[in-house]
Length: 85
Image (cartoon, rainbow, N blue to C red; front, side, top):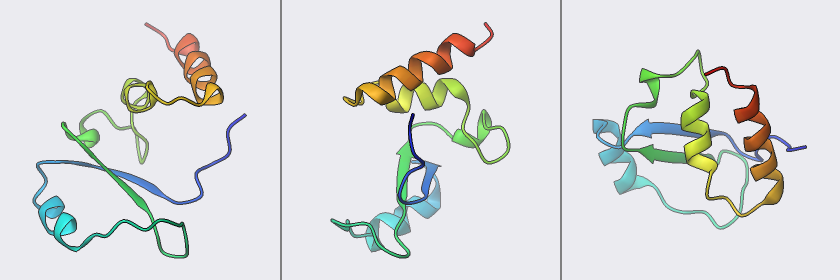
């Protein structure tokens, strides 16, 4: 039910040295255009639990659980139902 994001989304550990230089040089663009992306800074290293180039299911859930969009909430619910515990 959800389309892919209109821009690439990357996650990084907030303690990564690269984030310091990014935060000094980044500016927030009000509109998406060629060459724009979204960078999320997480309190832990997402590569620790990642599978290939994707974050793990629980991290994805936690990053989107407060989203107001009902479609996102339904997709999260479906994803969690499929997860083996």
